[in-house]
Image 1 (cartoon, protein in one colour):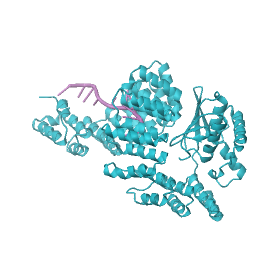
Image 2 (tube, rainbow, N blue to C red):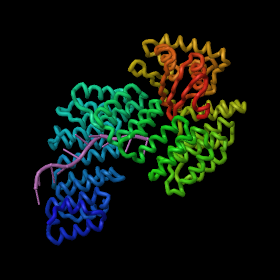
Image 3 (tube, rainbow, N blue to C red):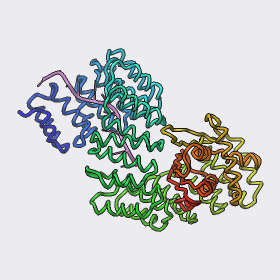
Image 4 (cartoon, rainbow, N blue to C red):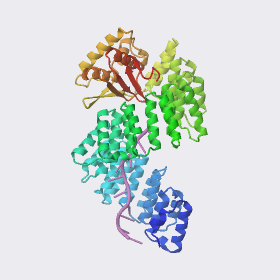
Length: 574
DNA sequence: CTAGGGTTAG
């Protein structure tokens, strides 16, 4: 008889599995290993199988073996309800058979997916009790769980304590650091790995590229790409996609497109989506939509991410009607809309001043609108000075328990625009009574291969006095060009002069000033900010680009701004 | 027929 593996491989539907099960039952093989466990495993994890059916079989086994449990725990860990795997693992500890290393592996994987940190620690203590402490694979999984649950210190600790490490262990920590808002540490580890004589593979470079993208570290990114080419890692479409994304996020959309256009491997849907999103971030709506068409012509089927990228492109390019048409065509094409699609059109309509339509769309949503949607609408209300709508949006935000400082400032600015000072005061009072949160803004800039980070009002940089002097100079020079500080971007509970100061030392201004004093005349300055650029900084940087003859590229949370000769690529629409 | 399991782009 053919082996159970080869028979399972031929199963493409649940009925095939059932036939095989019947066959095993009649031949009496079902009660023996490894056949039963292998069938269970296949049924629980393969797309041809069915997890409920696997669970059903499992419950009818009088004394399940370790491998039967493993099959179910593995299946549950991969399912939409990974916590069920943890529950199952706990019931197993009351069963007569013992968990093995594999059981622990699947349980830890479930913890990672369920973001269950304390459960992961419990599984880990079991790992030690059962004597699997030195298992490299388990240690790597554990490291990954810590990283994914946001406990990077413990992830590093596990890594440091490992007696043996292989490439996957390094990869797990590099990826963990990159995805856990410590991209600089990820890059450092990437370099250290090479120093220690390990050869980076495709997974390693993905982590490194992700770190470069976040930091906007073009030099690093470029050198990673050179390595990729030398090692021929670019025959992997996933690697190519990450390279395209890296170039796009580091401000070189042309290079991103070059990589896209010169790929030796087959493009995937992600490849197209990445490139469309890249054009969108630059406000090049025409190219983005062209690519969207090309993608369809090439036979790819756009998914919800493709539509999001295209909508985003319309949004950043002010192509309102195209955007609305795309949004409406989604249903026809059978692509489901999520909160982000709604967010994008609401933004699109809001910025065009079509507030009523935006409001109607929010109310027509089949899912609960999130905070971001109402904030978007509120922002549009501020732009168009619509008090009624602003009050509606604010009421929703308060109901939803939003404590964001920006929301209060927006509402108070709408009132201020109509000189309704009593209402302004009321909002200010509400802010004091609540513990409003401010997300700290920061900016990165790379100078001579070193990445510097600035926070608002930063005085930690060794050259901070020089930087502040440069900013004073800038402030003086731009006033000649008629600059007036746009202080309505600041909280209302401080005086005018303080407001100007608060604006003056925004992280992006500090980074640009540092760029001016530490790079050669005429060279391009690249800055990367975690939040959206503020209106005042936008005005100031435009003027800087003109007065100092510099091209300045600022990447903010959502897009790129390319400042040149006094104007910005976004045409002040963002 | 007693291994299998870990790291991965939009």
